[in-house]
Amino acid sequence: MADCECLAGCVFFNDKMQNMPNAANLLKKRLCRGDNTKCARHMVLVAMGRENVPPDLSPNQVDRAASLIASNT
Image 1 (tube, rainbow, N blue to C red):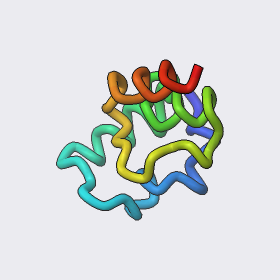
Image 2 (tube, rainbow, N blue to C red):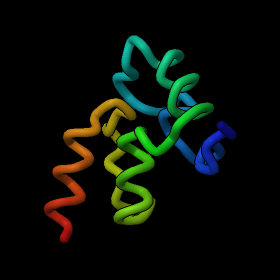
Image 3 (cartoon, one colour):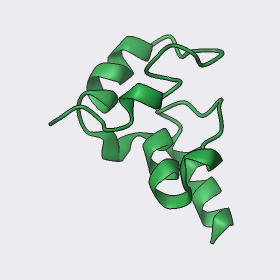
Image 4 (spheres, rainbow, N blue to C red):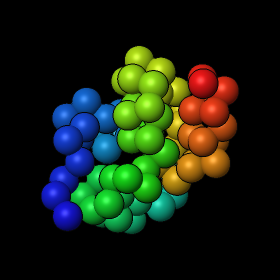
């Protein structure tokens, strides 16, 4: 898979997120440089726009992303 198209502006990928998960490097490899369709941040971005991605949303918080998206519909 190709790198995620959002890498340049992603606070997670660019280490600008507070409370980075301990497994950040593993998540970057698996989601940012792999299958970004399973990234919670990318899911919210696609469904609701970049401005609606919570700054503290970790890429592995898929349940939280689904809840945010469901509450937006």
